[in-house]
Structure formats: C-alpha cells, structure tokens
Length: 415
Image 1 (cartoon, rainbow, N blue to C red):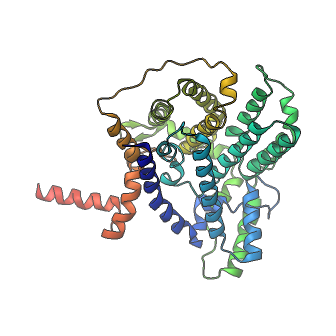
Image 2 (image 1 turned 90 degrees about the vertical axis):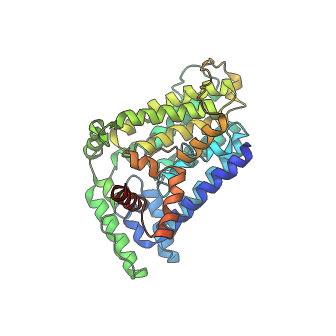
Image 3 (image 1 turned 90 degrees about the horizontal axis):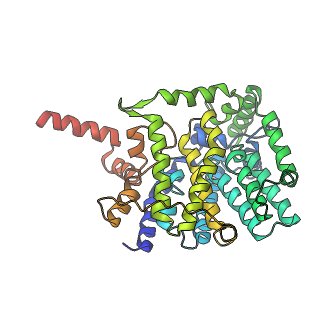
C-alpha cells in the first residue's frame, strides 16, 4: 500500500475519535474531569504554577461569556492541528504521515485521551522555540525563545524536563560548542528565573480552593444551567504535596495486569517497541536513525524524573518520542550534517509477516495508554477499538465491556 494512502487511512482513523472527544469535552459538565479542570488553574488565588492558561480562559469567559469548556476545546484542538500541520511540513518526507499520525506520535493524545490537556501545547511551544533557533541565534531570537519557553513553563512545569534542557543543548550546538558552555545559562537567565518562581509558588490547598470558588461564581452567574465544580482534580492537584504523586508512581512497581503481565515491564516494552518502530519502520536515513536513537536516550534521561513524581507514563513517553522526532525533522539539514554522528548499525528487523501486514497491524492495533497499563486499557486505546467502541455503542447501545459479557454468556450457554 502506498504511503500516501496510508496517510489518508491514518487521518481517517483519527477523525472520528477526535470528533467524539470534541463533543464530550464541549459540554460544560466536563469541567470536573482531570484534563479540563487542569486548564482552569488561574491566578485568582495568587501566582501559582500552571496558571497562565486558566487566566486566559477566565478573561475570555468573563468578557465574552463563552463557556470555559468551549474555550478549552478550541485551544486544545487548535494547538493540535497547528502541531500536526507543522510537523508534517517540516518532516520533509523523512517521517511518513501515517507514522506521524500513529498512536506512538501525534495520534497518542487522541487515542489515549489526553488531547484536552496541556501536553500538546507544550510540544508546540518546543517546536516553535527550536524553529526560531534554527533560523538564527541572534539576540532578537534569543529573546523570543526565552519568551516562548517562559510561556510554556507558566502553562505547565513539565516543559522544564522535556523542553528547556534540549533547547539549551541545541543552542550550545548551534554556537559550535562541542563542550557545554556555562554562558548558555546566562542566555536563558529569564527562563531559569521563572522556573525558580514556579518551583517556589507550586500551589497550596488554599489557592486551589480560591480558584474553584472563582470559577463556581462565574459558572453560577453566566451558566446557571450547569452543575458547579465539585471534584476538579486538576485544580486540587496544585495543592498536593509531591509525596502523593510519588506514591502512585511507586505503586506501579507492584502492579500486575490480569495477574500475569508485570506492568513496569510492559511500559519498558512499550518504550522499546515505539523506538524500534520509529527507527526501523519510519526513519530510512541511517545517519538520522542513529541520531534519533541517541536523542531518545538523552530525552529519556531528561524526562525520567517525571516517571518518579507522576504515573502518567504514556504522557511522558509522548514527550520523549514527539520531541525527539520534532528535533530530527527541524535540524535534519543543519546540525546533523555539521557533526559526525556515530552510525549505530542496527540491522533491519524482519518478521515472518510482509511489510504491508506489519504496517496494518501497527496502524490498527498498537497503542500506548495514558497511564495504568492494562491489557483492556491497551486494546481500548488502539485505533481499531477507538473507532469501533463509539460506533458500536451508537448502534447497539452497549459498551465494549457489555458486548463482551453478552457474547461470553451466550457462548457459555450454547457451547
């Protein structure tokens, strides 16, 4: 099957889950979900991490009486579309479109249900910063890169792990420095100072309570038909200490899925499989493939603290994989040619299936869950079942789990 046709297929598979996501999160009662409520964190209770996006949405809701859920969906979907268009354009046929839109790259936020979070916008900020660096590293662009980085950090501090270090390392390379230049830190001093502020003003229970009260006041005033914010887990999270998320992350070490799949091993296998698929199936140029493997290892090390302080391992893999592919796509014709890259002679992996069958299995039945690796969760997040589930529910009125129970009951009764 031609790559162009595979690209159309990948786009079509994404379309319906995207539409259903937009419909679900456009409802104002979706504000009580984790993803949407994270967008509501604002500065109404004082300066706090992750507050920039919520402050913008609060201003829009106050002045234009637009439902905050609609604003959240518009920002999330617009950021996603801009990122997709940009990466397709800059990849310059190095990465096939069907790979870019697959469950291991840009398809992951939709299939794994974290499109309505701040991750996509964070990656978009990183891509913008890297493009600015590629164009020129003069003082004007350095200022713009600092501004973009500050906006990204104020929106979500995860950028400190997957974004800022690779930006500074790239700047160091562009300065033709083969060793780390300490003066790079001075170039990014404004961003580093904001990073310190984010760590200091990480949030308290009092601030999260004030934010919820502000939103409930606005909702009651302009959207009286809606329920009030009750749980708002994304807002409450800023008042949590680090021990809570760390305990959740540690608990993964003792998880077994179905009694026989060791969850940490499944995450490691997901990481390995995604890297090999991208390196062996997507990137044909051997030098690019070598630098991709190196870059993924670097980004994995930089992002690793997130695996310790949070258990959304799928999202952390999204940061690693998409940031690495973005870097390769942007600098394919500059830095990679300027530096001698050691070629990693990994032989092509040949399975018993032909190429078309391998691609078909990958496009339809591969996934990386957002968190909490389970066999059921894995299948549910594949492109096939992400499309099958909503359509079958519309037709039959039963979820996949209920359909399975009905079929199992029928089989046990008649056979």
